[in-house]
Length: 135
Image 1 (tube, rainbow, N blue to C red):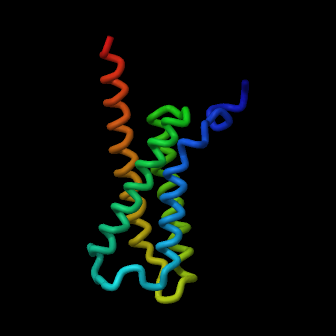
Image 2: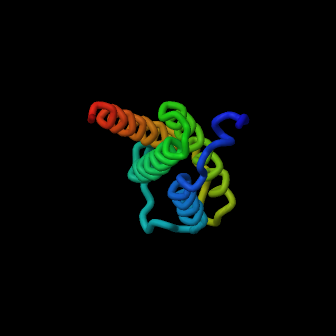
């Protein structure tokens, strides 16, 4: 069977990440998802973006690894896809009343996606190492 690793992926493992992406889209569609407004470059809002995309990228990295992609490749793709989805999320928010597209939010999304992917890759590699040691 030819077609590379993408053709052989078992897509069902990406379900949790796709559901999470749908949740992000839903929350971004709300005019006022949180009743507070923070200001400054390092705000609670940026922390929420970081955590939100760290979770998304970790689910992507886990799903891609379970689906058959190499763990390190899955991590790279998870970080890249997380960042790209964060960019589309910011563009989406530009069209939602009382919301705006903020490049600093996208930076927080990207840093969170990178962190989530790195943590998941480390977890999966450690798990692989442990399972290869056992008889």
